[in-house]
Length: 338
Image (cartoon, rainbow, N blue to C red; front, side, top):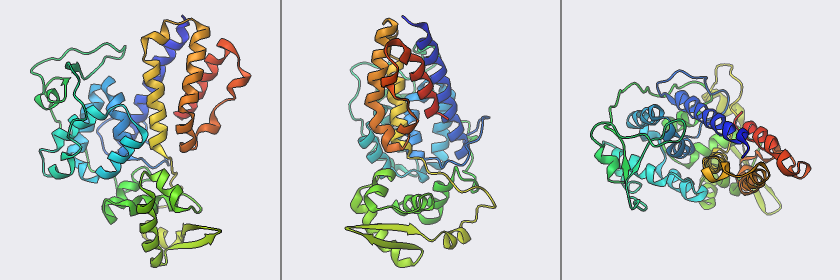
């Protein structure tokens, strides 16, 4: 067994939780952490990864629930379901329990379909884990809302400290657009075209998490506004946005332009890496077999990273034979979290 991989697992867990804290804090969650910079936060992808990783930080999990109670109206449920299904995130049953809680409030109708439990575990499981991966025992009366979905956790105590998102800054630009234009595909289209020179509907649909026909129909309507332009290249139509018209409306106060990140496939890749690193069988292997396993892991997640535009940051594993690949793997994974 190579202990360095076990040490890296703890480091990776800490880096991943820091990333989640940073993005939730940018959206208004109470917490002191480094602020998210120019990258626009994707709230649906963030919620899906948090359903897996926030189980290792109960405070983050409950602050996330607190934020959803106050700001859940900004979540696009149809897009959330599609990203969950397309990227195959692992936290579907946790998400169903969260939706079950939110389905009791004023926004109940939008959460009810999501609250339908996909498949209950045959036995109840502890919801939370300690930093070292051991299940945290439930203190106090179990929360019945989570028990319905096969999860054991203590009673919920909502502190009510989450704030409305700040209507400034690039991190919350998608939420600003949703507040302005409504919860619909046009917000993602505008954001995508603000952060790309030009693109065609199928690419926009893939990167934003919508059906191609939905994006194509919206783009055709939006192009009539004169703000979004279209040109035909061979058999494809490429759309772009006239920046001056939009910057007059969405003046950023001299900030740098926002940066687009295709978060759903990137977060799914990060989740897959975590799930493999969290497998005790991996850490029982010798260094040569560990290197072989993480090499296969990176081959498995490479399509996700390619869709996120992050695969070019990876090293050429063919140049690193045997166990010499282990430090390369660790370095590559850290690059994905920068």
